[in-house]
Image (tube, rainbow, N blue to C red; front, side):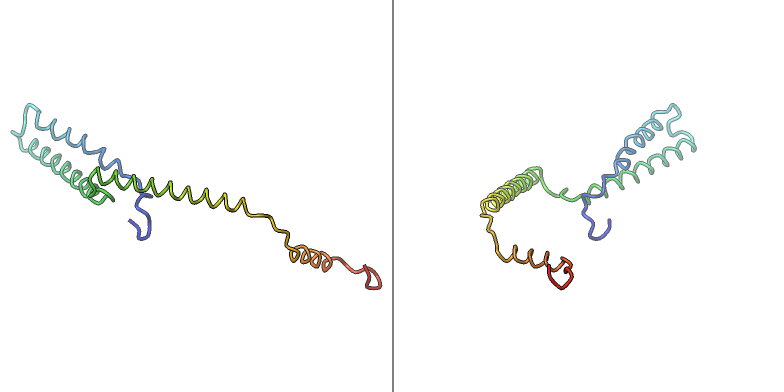
Length: 133
């Protein structure tokens, strides 16, 4: 994970978890065959399939144990969600109040603004012959 990058921008590697069931099925199929583990080839195939499953399971466990918030109980997660919803409502109320206050401000005609506009418009007007407008 890159430094400074929020964790929620990375998608969950579902393929890591999706491959567990098929790998377990291979192990089970090999143990249920008629020859079982009687031949060296069957033993080798079972060993390979078991190791493949164990490795995939270890990767999935490692990833799952590093997920943010995974250390919280369900009740604690619910508490955090409730607190965030309350904070969101409070912020929305603040924004609504601010918008109402801005709308209620009187529009004040500032004479400096209009005189600046007049000066600007005169300054950009070309002079007529003889220096008069």
